[in-house]
Amino acid sequence: MQHCNCDSCHTTVPLNDSMIILGEHLCLDCARKVADKNPDLTEEDVTRNPDPTVCVNCGHDGGFQRLEQLMELPFCGTCLPLIGNRPFPGWIKISALVLAVLVVLSLVTNWRFIQANSELEQVDTAIAAGDAREVANLFASAAGHAPEAYDLKIMTSYWTGIALVSEDRPEEAITEFNKCVNELPPDFQVAEMISSARSGAAFDRHDYREFLRLVEIQADDNPRDLTAILSVASALACLYVDTGDESYAHRAEAIIDAIPERDMDPSGEEYLMRIRHRLESRTIIGSQEFLAQYPNGWYASGEAH
Image (cartoon, rainbow, N blue to C red; front, side, top):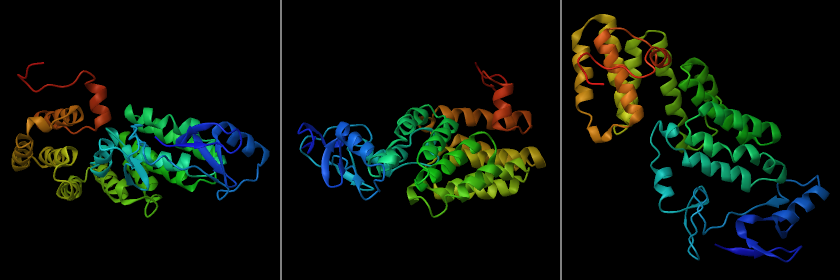
């Protein structure tokens, strides 16, 4: 961990607990006092540099060793792979990249933007809980405190889109994701989010051939993504129910049988349960309706509970 001396009170503080205002290195207490006396500070007047030896995601202290950087921010060896190999749609499991952007927004912008920190500091908790709607609400509140921060508005649209997808409202999600096109780094996979929402919209329209076409593209682009693979099985199950053609059911079962048990996670198991219900009952219902009908889960005939 690196330290610096405050030019005002002359105390030594961690670099992450300091700011540079009008060319002076200041601890946070002194920085607040200076900012209060100078309400017309601009973005160029106020900066805050992250410590290159401390991971911005988990706080790991690298001592005197500089950590590897992504988006000009330091990450430890544990967190960096989570960001570099972020799967789609991994937002429901972990969004370390988004947490990194929060650091960019809260540490490298001017003082007025930092007033939004109370909301931003709660985002990681909401992400860990898988509560996309709460994440969107927190970004919206932060954007209200810092209307100049265009990035906060974009992140509000991004997470609102994710929340709408999780609420089975894909058409509305597409509108929000379209606001993010060319506005976020490739790691946010906005195009993939739009494709996912479009496939959901095709499902809602009962256009199951289009649903299959879109999810097959997603699976081809993400061959190791469990959700993408199961989505193909889901679309085939829909076509089986819709047409009565058993070849679709056989193809769906073949996909399911080819998934190694070790690759299955709780969200995958829930998705698989819905697909098996569709194949056995020969009925098609959305995820929200399924959860309402079977709050304790559904089991195939003869399957042990």
